[in-house]
Length: 433
Image (cartoon, rainbow, N blue to C red; front, side, top):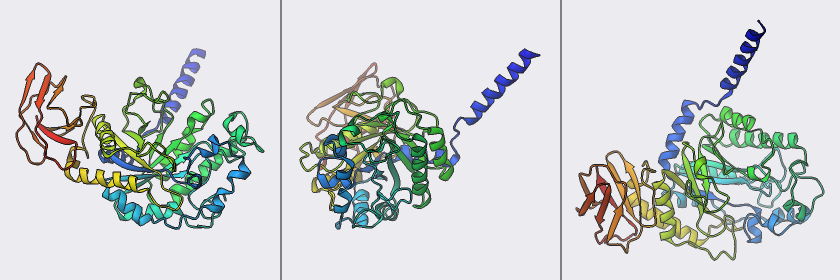
């Protein structure tokens, strides 16, 4: 009898645990499919830190004391910000969604938050709700909106000990503060973002790595999001394997499974959820007045094409200036991408990837009975693709459909590259299978 009771209790516990496992709704699954097909979004890192022109980590890196950093909102008055102009730019770039930093690590909220007076409406002379204006403008252009939300907070006493200096911010201790209070605060802010701004298609978390031993109470937080907006996709930039309740997996400044940064996701932790690669047009995420790592169009395009070759989206970042303008070179890169996608977008949007890994010479995407061979190194006269074991009907140039000669021995495909004649490089070949 005692053994039977133990067995029943064990079964009950197992059933309870099994019942708690996240089951995405049909709306969520449909949104995952949209996300996988979208392939290209724009990331926006913008906040009061832009005033200092030294990136989004300036509070930490320059060890500002709270009372010093808290002066910045008084100077933040982005009179040249035009949400409609931004949205038109992103649409012209060929993006399908926008992910905006609603709150970064400095704890400053870019919307009118009742949970914290440290926000764009109450603490700045601008007194306008950036989140509201941007969300509305994006919807007019047919762009979906997602919000980046920082898990860590250098400003709040319940996250970090009170009375700290800038140096103590850099030496934070996960055992101090008031954790229950901080979790309640985050849930209150997320409720605002998911209640007051219409349909939101994703929440992009960052900062888990700041307190790796903390109980972030993800089951509570993720459940709240999915209850308020079931279609809303949850992602977390924790650089680990996906956990229960997440809907997509992101890779910071890296391609899935590569971990060239040293802090990225290990190859064995790459899951089966929809994937997103995020990177910058410049060297910094937030506005950096001395940013000398401005990427060329070819570099940015290669990032998009390689991400698609892995079946992932590219979330490409801009860091607007404190006046609300996006720098000219970042606008140029976006428009150039839009011009290329106008011509070759069918070889990117809605495609599959991951069957043959990209390299510096080429990447492959697939849609139905067509495989697209993206030529990245246009100085080559021949491309050799290993492990290509699918029967081929023909290879032609994309669009013009001029025949391209090729040979194949065993599973090695050799393609004689034509002179593309394309106004925009790199170019694409179509392989009918």
